[in-house]
Image (cartoon, rainbow, N blue to C red; front, side):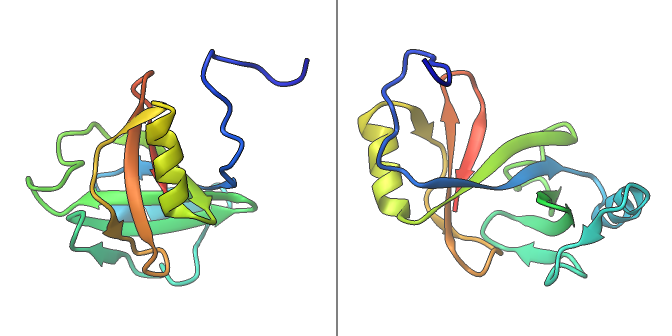
Length: 141
């Protein structure tokens, strides 16, 4: 037997690829400086943080090799992350068919959708967030 199972139906039709880890921060520019000490570089296109008006966050991105970290700073009390402690809080997967993936997750009761689809700062692609039965938040892009 290969892999492991947690008793959930297999997700055979989804082509999911790791995209990034999401981290809530209080100051993106300080985080940029901190991570530079460990050899991370700003992701091209994120030399300056981007404003995501729909999510009410300031977004930065850093990379070292294949590890991409999205830094999210709340833009005020109306931000969905304004009540979070700083730290890593979501994982993002890229899919080649977002609508099909959303449908399969819902049909198999793998997770509950917690946001409406919105436009992301990642090449203006549509994104949506889910929370699974273990209270793990994941994003689909």
